[in-house]
Image (cartoon, rainbow, N blue to C red; front, side, top):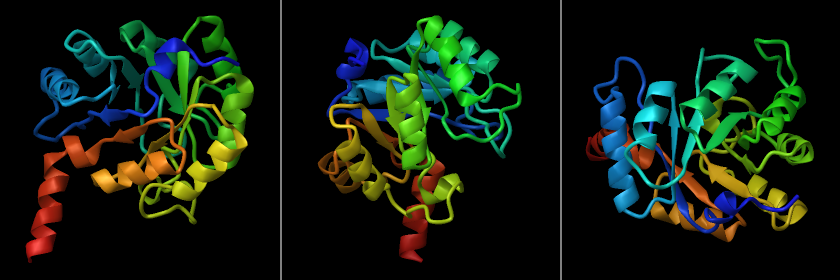
Length: 227
């Protein structure tokens, strides 16, 4: 499978995840769009965001690609959990749709493979959010354009053996097994050195979210350090 030109354009770059959730002070599509534009001016190659309103607002504000997803629920498969969710993200303006690539049951009863097959027939570019090398193998085997390590770090709570920082071991394994394939690092990238380490480990690109776009978490890190 050849690499799509849009995905090729992300090689060696930084993607910024711009997300806020109900109850948080920044939770407003226009605010998310403004932050996304600021990240674009700083050099981000793409924006990853969640929710139909945010996807639409951000797509109207930035010129770089938008990776869209729709989170529903907090347990099991909640990142773009069904075919309906994925199609809605695409219709809202996402250039790439991200979805959970694990083999766990999905709310609509479709398998991951069935979901991806239907979306590829629609011409949708897909980013598989993975927890393990098995997920990455599954993602590329069925035709996903990108596989990421999104669910392989401690905060994702998928694997008891998950790493506390970016999963460099999984990145190295995947880049060796799939040379030339877009394997993206996402999860627990908290400083520029983490991002560089990920690229050095073979990452096609690096996604950073909290460390750039979540001031509440950033403030708590500094407060913890000075106490």
